[in-house]
Amino acid sequence: MNSATRQTGLLFLWLLSFILTGDACDVARSELPRSRATDLKTDFATDENAMFARPVHLAFQNGRLSVVDAEEASVSVFDPEGRFMGRAGGKGQGPGQLDLPTAAWPVADGLIVSDGRNRRIVRFDARGRERDSFRLNFFPAAILPLAVDRVLVARNPGGGDKKGRVLNCYDLRGRPLWSALPPAASGDRVADTMSNVVILMGAPSGESFAVFRYRAEGIRRFSAAGRDLGEIRPGRAYPVGRIRRTIAPGKTIQAEVFCWHAAYSEGRFYLLAAARTEDGDLGPGSDVYAIGFDGRIQEVIELPGTMTKIAASAERLYALDLDYRLRVLKVEKK
Image (tube, rainbow, N blue to C red; front, side, top):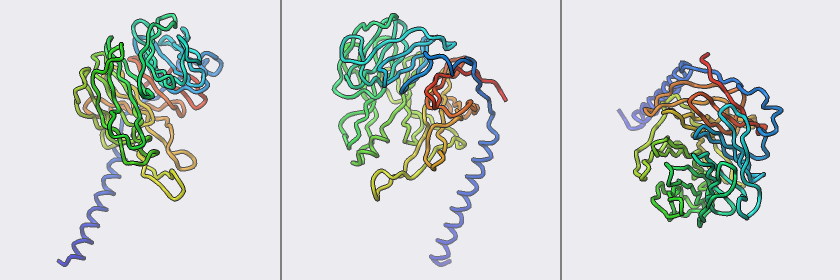
């Protein structure tokens, strides 16, 4: 067999394997168990407390739900049924004020918030009053409380910064404890900024999980002490989005969207898969893939429309829709 014939044969086998893999993936995806999420709280279109100007973070923890509104520089808190409980923050640089907050989590005695433009981490008490804070030397892109005495802070270096780490853990006085995950550093500022966008989730044990939105790298696991516990990769039927995106005249990059948003509860990961937009781009979707620690897809949850953010409890899913309204959802088997 000559070289040309061998190369032709190898190409044929590669194409055949690609086609068979794609068909197998499609069949597997169509056979996955499916559930439907419907609105439990039906007044979402008229409840002014559940409408936001620019919601950037949604989280459920300690029996409460928090929504960060970056434009209003505030954090709204709700009970598990979606009833409004109170609000913290307000735009400014003074005590109790925030400027471009990026994330917040309910903790046992109040809230912990990443105050983006003020470059600090702030704790509020149950009445929405500032308790204490500590400063950072970078913009906090996301946070996650780990147990009662430490907080994980994500930074997005961008611009080819190879020295810092994406994950940085501190005690509540701002003393560094550990760091992990080197940033993407290709030298292209736009591409690196996209590649370093991370979503944080946590378990009551103090274990943390990190998902890069624009990297198909699975779910990274870390112990409370910062030990790398490896990664969880979903089964082949999970739909990673891929698209070529123009970032400058004459310059395009290959973009991957692992998930648009993610949540964790009771041993399950909930990944909001990206969907194709009308103009062929990738954006938020309406399917949530529930995944176990073994990576197996346990079910696909169909949401009542396109959602931008999700959170989860043992009994509910929570979401923010395209009109920036909070939705409280119940999940039922189809």
